[in-house]
Image (cartoon, rainbow over all chains, first blue to last red):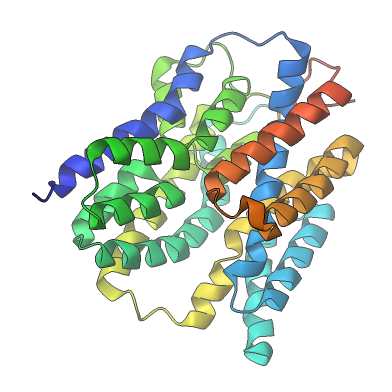
Length: 102
Length: 241
């Protein structure tokens, strides 16, 4: 028997939402444990870095343009450019490079 | 000088635009996967509007195509999205204690890699209105991208989708680089994260582990190591020693 698609969607949505919302609604106090606080301070930067590399090399048609985009983004972010500029200029670098590369 | 609510909302919209653009490109390819699973454009759009999760949706569409059991669906969604549990914990410390339950429920609904990234980059406590601004740009990009992906999966030129695919990574860099400038521990951690992530992707003994689980394992191990070796002293958020 084929399961109804909307029931699948409901199970997907509820499971995903519970994972996202439970800590935010249940943890109402400021955490005082120093190690735990430090852990939560480092989590965002580590997780974003882990997700960025090496995935960015596989996102583009050529790993060279992916690497160029990463270096562009790192440099622009280092020099304090806005989120929008960093993001869009990385895309532009890939587009221009791939006109030559691919 | 304190920002007005409208200014905060506008700032959210501004940061939400690149997220929406990147989402559009990714969601487009997600739409193709939904189509292959036999879903209609409307069903795929509803899924995207409710889940806002790329890996979770890819897995879900695959399971729907396979006519899997509901239990399998629940387990796989929990695995694919487990990193949001960590992000939600981190966010619980980023919002003021007085944040209303409705705002908490809303912020929770939009815990995605990218929205979480820009939220963490905010100075001091996160103002929920900022999240409303970001989500009002990002969510439509994701939902309509999926919708159009089902209908016109093959017309977005490869050059364009390739270029747009780095938008989200560029944003991540814009979030994790500025603190690395002033905090040497964060700078070192980013280097270590890149290296470990690279190694875990290349070593064959990790080949059987899903990318979602890899992200969690690496995040927990590296962050915990850093927390023990370099505990953050000051009470001030975002201001490590």
